[in-house]
Length: 218
Image 1: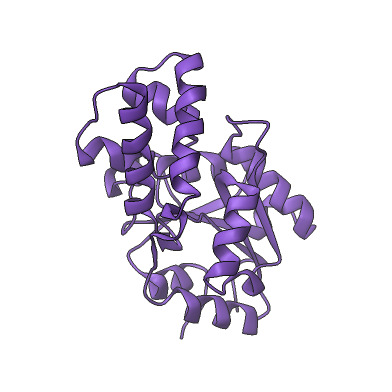
Image 2 (image 1 turned 120 degrees about the horizontal axis):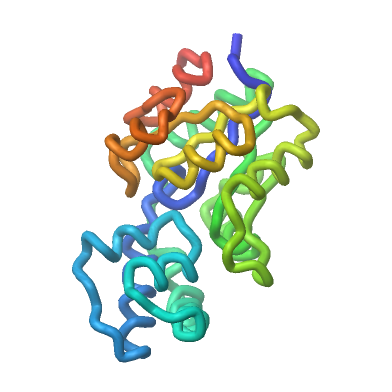
């Protein structure tokens, strides 16, 4: 028996390794803005949170500069870097098995809604998901909690009937604020320490372990 009616998945760093495309786009934006380009350790932190937050927090930009940096970032990202990613091993099998067992599936991501849909369609994944809750282009600072609650509303289930799967503290915090359990994946762009610090309900190191945390054995 599955433990949850629905499993919600973060996209970047959880379903796919999109780091190369995101980091290349952030690097391009910083160069265009005349800001110093930090090392890969810092650029990796762009995977997960909103772009405005990332440019302001990791690069010390003002709100105005961050807004312009997002414009340059998107020019690069939508020029082909959005497909510069790989799907993590075992994810498709996990989606198929969860659906066979009757689970509802959703993607909950800080990536803009249209971009998330575009990527899922391109890689043949959109059909596995009952809904996609991405950020509104008019609201650059959409919190993960709000996106999770939107997905739960679309799925017509309560927070206690769902588990959120993600690779960073933002996913775990969002799940807690929304009232959901969480599965922190240790193969993405967060750290095991931050997932433990935020008290993820479970930790998983691969797709099979995600399934086991949700009560699935395959």
